[in-house]
Structure formats: C-alpha cells, structure tokens
Image (cartoon, rainbow, N blue to C red):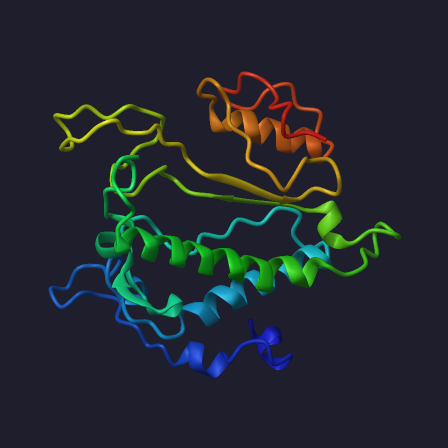
Length: 239
C-alpha cells in the first residue's frame, strides 16, 4: 500500500488515521462493529488499494493466485460509498420482495442493485484496467488475457439466505405466489479466449460450484480430472 501511495493512487495517511476501535463498548472483540459498522468514509479507498496491490502482484508475477474479500454477509457498513446511506446487511441486502415475479421491485431492492453495480465498477477500475497492459511474460498479449478474475457471493439472495435453488412455500413468505428459483451469482472475467464471456449461462439442473472451479482450472492449463465434489466441466463456459 505504501508503494501505491507513493504513486498517488491512494492516500496512505488517511488509511493510517482510521483508528477504528478493536473492542466494542462492552469489551468484546470488535468483529461486527469497527471498520464494518457505520459510515467508514475510507472504505472505497481501502478497497481500491487492495485491488490495485493485487493487480501489481499479478503483473510482477509475485502471486499467481490472490483472494480478496471486500466485506462479509452480516456487515453493517454504511453503503454511503455508493450514495446509499444505509447499513448493508439489514437495510440493503436483507430486503424483499425481490423474488416474487408478481410484485414490482421495491426501492430497497434497487438500492441493493446500485451497491452491487458500485462493486462491479470498482473491480473494473482498480483491478481490470491495471491489467490491460502488455504482458512481459507473454509478448503479444495483455496481462488480463492470461488472468481469470472470479467474482462470487456466498448466498443467492440476501433476504432468504439461500444456497441452492428452491421454490419457497407460502408458509415461509406471504402470498401471492409463485416464487422464482434463485442461484448464487458467479462471475468470471478474462481468460484470454479460453472462456466464453459476455453472456449468462444457466443450467437446467443444479450443479455444484466446484464444477466451475474445475472448468477454470482447465481453462488455465491445469489438467485436473476433478475438484472436490465436482461432477464435470461446464462445457458452456469453455471456448
């Protein structure tokens, strides 16, 4: 981060000045409050710094695989960074009815879409764009051509805490019905022509996420025959 600060990409002094508490007023570890509670005006800058650092690590071949988690599902961080001054967990992602096809989307659901679009734009600006440069290890290509970015969530819908597709019974949520099936969103970027991008792929039957992991491994040249509980490669994704 210090190097990024010297290059003028982030304000390191502001990051160091956060001084968020390590404990709650009751003396318990501050995992729920702190940086992920309330209006942290530096969140966008810190998130961008992490992605820019990841991009530089990839460009320098210092880290072939990087994992970055921007927040967590029960974070009460204010979404003011996306001009939505509401707590992310209960007021933005935990709203409805977004799964009833007979009910118009509420304003709260539009707020959730706005925050997700903000995250998508940050990925483009701070991670994808820095990789749109010549790859010194592969002349004639860009670094993004030899990189796969995998963007995912741990649940399919914040209101219903679902991990797999399901038709919700009327006893769980009020009528009117029907409820549409929901899926965990999985997004891939890059791949240098090894992946078919720019489209949405839906399967007729549920498949484990490990099928996609197996597919990404093969797209990157790793000859794996299986990955965890995978059932096979997602052929619709491979170019």
